[in-house]
Image (cartoon, rainbow, N blue to C red; front, side, top):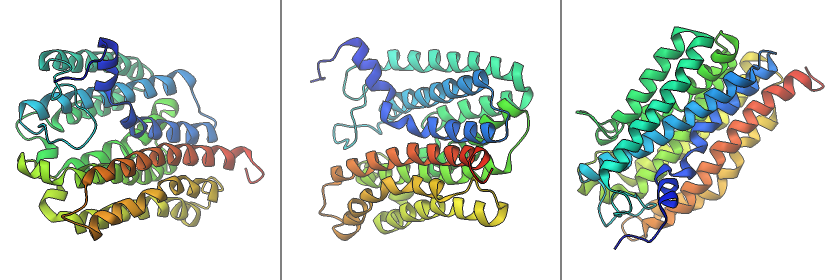
Amino acid sequence: MAPVVTRTQAWILATRPRTLSAAAAPVVAGSGFAAADGVFAPLPALAALVGALLIQIATNLANDYYDFVKGGDTGDRLGPVRVTQAGILPPEAVFRGMVVTLGLATLTGVYLASVAGWPVIAVGLVSMLMGVCYTGGPYPLSYHGLGDVFVFVFFGPVATAATYFVQAQAWSPGAILAGVGLGAFSTAMLVVNNLRDRETDGAAGKRTLAVRYGDTFSVVQYFACLALAAAVPVVGMVMMDWSAWTLQSLAGWLPCLPAAPLVVAVLRDSGTVDRRTLNPALGMTARGVALYGVALGGGALFGAIGPFG
């Protein structure tokens, strides 16, 4: 029996608000670098944020719809409620919602293209296409172990560099490097998600890296992603000699550390642990992504206007 919720609550649930930090963090970081370089533009920055959130929401709706019609979501699902699988919204409504959201994202892209030109059109179209193809289309990325690559690239260097570009009409090495850290951190979110769903994904034919290579690989991948995110500010300090890459930036990954014991527990108790215990680790990692983006952007701005600027 479907949970009793209002129509508004159903659509809010369908957007999966807790995932939106992965879309917002690169925009915050990229805008911080733009502000540090004196090229911050409020309207393009706001439009970049709105566009990123709309593409993320459209991707979430696509996942909800396509996972249901492909049989990837069943009653055994361990993660948060999916509105289609739970019977809260009909599949047709979720599909229409995806189309409308992509339309709104396109309108945002038209404005950004008028400001920054054809590179924005290319980035926007490819981002929207990959968002739908994450679970839809003839070769869904997440069903073939390519979801990690998608998340790293489009929630990392692409989103951060594009945010800077729409404000400065130029590319920033610092923003691109920050995007590498953000991509790694967002991938860590996906790793926890796929580790939690390894059995149900495998039964549904969803060949994520967790399904292909198992628990030990996924735990190692999770900590490798966090290590890469932690290394990015250090690389920035050593290679670029910018005061933007201060310990203030490095502190951005600390909030996810409480998730580490929960992830390790899955490896230790593999086969016996209730994988729902990974849901708190997923939430902690999502909050870590948001704080990491704020720390990188704030660190860049602090470096420009602070005592070392």
